[in-house]
Length: 130
Image (tube, rainbow, N blue to C red):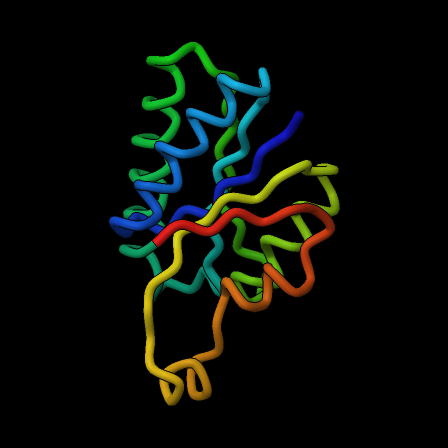
């Protein structure tokens, strides 16, 4: 089994990592922790460094539990939702786990919702935690 965890360094994303550890143990799964950034310009350098640090942190959590884990920093010009769904298709993922942040309806309208996109377009079950 393959589990994909969408990770952005937030508190709810950290909770998604904890849930992924439980699922990986229960289903003898390998885990792919994915962070998506739309662009990798010089202006984004600090964000990229922070994302890489977050992925190293996540990898360490799984290593402590002897769970196979790969980390991926995706900078492919896609929105995070599109990136996660495309990656899930490419890797034949069996489950996606991600944290969700509560936002107002206006916030969703203006900024979109990564979770909504993933839930509606993913090729596999999606577990969300908040």
